[in-house]
Image 1 (cartoon, chains in turn green, orange):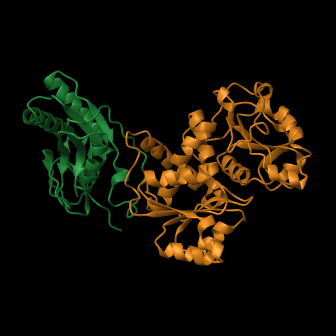
Image 2: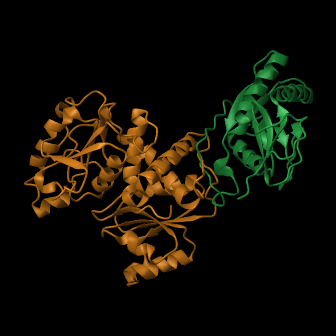
Image 3: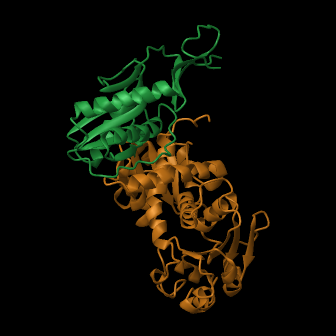
Length: 184
Length: 313
């Protein structure tokens, strides 16, 4: 039940906000912004947050390598045991953390699919410090949906998407879908 | 999950859930800083009325790796010696804010009794001859890890496990039997007739009085500690006789299949049930049991205090 962005129907519960090719273009733009801001890719490490940020960080690494010609180190981070809402909501920690290099002195770019309250990123900052002292930590997200509860701001954004709290944002290789949560 | 007092209390579903979480905890333990803030501000009290080194240290290490505070309630220096009742002790310690009691006691059922007196979660670290559930959980985890299996309700189907020794008086045997067979393994209890449970008809288990018959056909040989105090009850003629029939030596061990695992919950009685150095064989998983114990106990504490409700999938 998804529609193209141009479709103006009103009864559906899902809206296709970005299509797959929009996602690719956003990825290319973010890659150029990363290279511009860091004056190249020296010392840059991509860290994808489990789980939605992992495949995005892989795609981003591929795009960066295509532009700059060099592979970019990439890792993945699971923050479930660093969250501040442990015990308040279901946690099933199963995802892996894999950080291939010492992060001391690195320019770490944390990659996630959706930025919402900012609590996941807060947990990620805590978790990262167990792997060294990065020179800088930057944040890249495909969708910034607002409703921040912490002073956290992204450096690279695929799309700003104003949402209400009863909506879900789903990012996948097929694009970005905004879905009204079923109320029963 | 509120308590982990026996394997049947948490059921196969709970066992699988803890084994899954333990995998994640094993990953935490392999990080450069093996510590996460998950349980910061929670207090885990260990209450050991019976001697223990490895279990108590394992629990305390697990709690600290999750950033919980640990209090070791030392029974020998406590007011229990001034005549304070167990109940008053529990109520006092829980009023100080304990979230979990890890309890070991020589009397079966004490963990259940204690949970009547406190809102804290109870982990049974061994009660009499009854249960020692975290030992069984770490043993399941060790078999799984050695065999490259994923946690599931049928993950041990097709495996034959021999539990050798005094299964009549062993809480480890009781918990392991339930956990192993709950995950689908076939369990055979091996020992002299005087040390086998008197009636196993209601259990899904077979028995044998010949270790030599069983050895070539099992995937896991789980040696129990021979409790020397049983000698006084005249259940075994003498230890040398026991060792001759049920002790593992190199010759006997060489009759197992090359992929058979050797396990022991510790502490080992060298020269009684263990007549050779198990570290001489790569089939020994005894050190793995100790290492995995920390991950599994982290998973137990995490499930009790932090997991929230099951995620609907």
